[in-house]
Image (tube, rainbow, N blue to C red; front, top):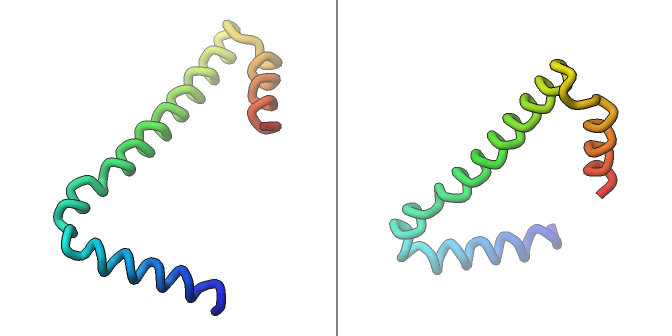
Length: 74
């Protein structure tokens, strides 16, 4: 309860202050959703492309695994 109270207070205050500009905020609120959608789509396309390249033998599986393991250690 002690940790939730400051967050509730902050969110209530921000909601009160932004209430007057609700329409303007709603016009731009969808933009982060589009950015996240584009990033997820790019990751899925890259994964499919890597899968196809490995299956065709154009890229060695060991090379892909080496680079993917590098990403998991960051």
